[in-house]
Length: 339
Image (cartoon, rainbow, N blue to C red; front, side, top):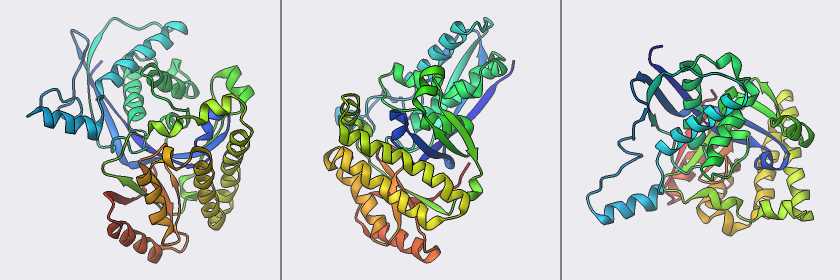
């Protein structure tokens, strides 16, 4: 077996998120603007290679160390590769899939903005899993619908709070409609995943923060309130899930004005449930910047980036670019390229 390399792409939650963690429905897409690459090279010993930037262990000073921690957190990518190897092995062991005794060296690179709600962590795990399936020649033994939950289990191993949506988009690629029906989930561990034609999408834009704060706090209390049966959270989360079902039909019918309404409603419901303190001022400002020119806008994930749609076309898109540049915020805007 020779060297193997795989790439996994950033993803955007278009509608329905975060109901994927609450037996809801979502629409998400993988985008080719940003990606993570993992390379596997057969070797005598199993080794994981730290990245020269993301796993930095040498600093010019303690101030430099603190600055890096404040901007990027404590963790690099090696822990994700390690967890991916462990959960891949666990899945194969529990499903009677024998693995040969060969060893390998894993290395990685990524250009997905950190902590920007574009699913950079799961992209690394997904690319690693693809390398491992090919190295051990077991791709045909692991159903595609099982792969997102293997990726998620690696992140859960590290204490990362998330749902299946991101991993489904990265495993399947393109545009995917997902139904996390409770009975089906409890019986199979998977949702019901349907690919859609990315050509159904209108032009979309991602606005992301250059220096985002940790987005994990967005999930702070809502999950527990949902588990406790909080009627407000339960009702609003069901409505969020319904937006994805309506959005699927809007895309199929080419009803982009309805799509814009659904995107805005998705953010508004999220804001009502989580509150401004949990969402974060910068994240809210990005949404408000897009809405200031009439664009529809919502979070791509749990914070750090938003997806915008300009229903009035290219002139409005230019106004959106100008609004981002004039906002005084450290943000970037890119047009989405669906993968």
